[in-house]
Length: 374
Ligand code: MRU
Image (cartoon, rainbow, N blue to C red; front, side):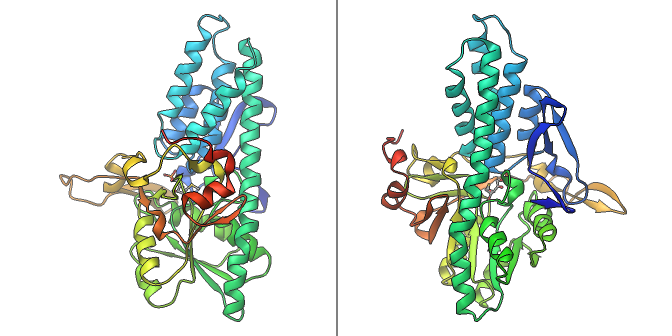
């Protein structure tokens, strides 16, 4: 996608210095576009943990390139190498617990490098695996766009061409992926096809990925949108101002329970109560067939309470952080919640749209259905 007319992805090899990986440091958006160099394993782990990069598919790709970087600088001694690889993988996997794409990507690199013996040859294979994961993500997001487009077109036709109002939560846009996004892919596709759309963007406290990043993306692409407080969605739905909800996912279980950014569940409840279709867009790298009951089994990240207590923004060209709460009030910061499958109208994946239940998901991904729950 484009920023100020220039095409970007969210992660790439540095031109002229291919052993360095570059990312957009998303903590500074929308006010500053900062490109960061990642040079060694610890840089990758920090970038994921401290959310310079975020979003399930993007943290997967970043971790895969992190394994490549680890191998570039690892020991040549074949007795020490296996332990070093195990520890590097564990460091990356431990950065964030909820999005399964992270573990998926690290495990895929681990499987790929088994074919080689030397550190150098393993590094080559790790780089290829990271590229494959990244290119696959772009392709899957593009396909999600193609499969989601008819949903928007149908509503547009029903409304006689009046704008289709779509509500989204957090940032499941191209900044959360490599390109296109998951929830945003059908929206970009519809907009590019000339279908009038308007997006309600939940601000998504505490880190405001909606207000900061989704709004930025949509603005850059010229998609009409309005930022709303996280509490506004139910009111808008009651008044017929939302035609469709599309959100992303960080982990979806074999029966279709969806972990996504905290607050998604409340939107699903409101959509259900008001007869608004609620779709979840996700690539298959977000499916976790080892889990069944999402509420009981998906690990929910708990982040620093200071993300709730403070808020960050720009004033007179400078970025400040200010305290919102009484100094002594405790706060708690759950990063995600789980929307039970019954509240999900359908899943939009790279293979099409399916119901959120085990039979439908297994029919779409028969290769996963052979995996047994843990
Ligand atoms: O905490 P984040 O920003 O990494 O959260 C992940 C997300 O961006 C969302 O939950 C998103 O909807 C799923 S990722 C496409």
